[in-house]
Length: 110
Image (cartoon, rainbow, N blue to C red; front, side, top):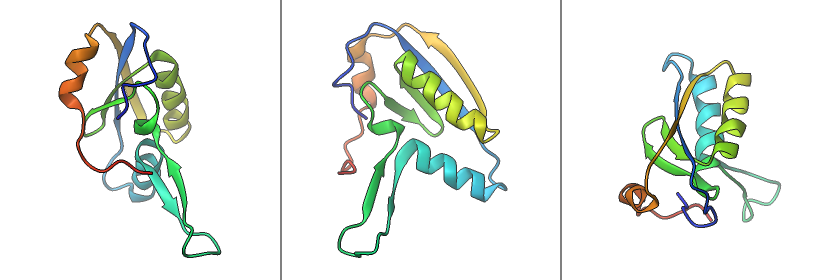
């Protein structure tokens, strides 16, 4: 999650849903949202692809729920809709400091 880099006043709450029985599709959605590491020809240099949660202003609220800037929400909706994933979103009013409560303390992907 990175609140840094986005100073806009608008946020969109995004929720997506993939059936657990659709493992291939669910795995692809996780790669889009959270990123992934791909092995290259050189095992010492894997290729890292950052997900939407690493983009400026995107806040991971919880399982399948994000708060994000409107432009990023539209990009995510387009990517997930192309995979036939159910996506719901709503514009929300929330103070930036309130989103800080959801900041994850885990090690970020480099």
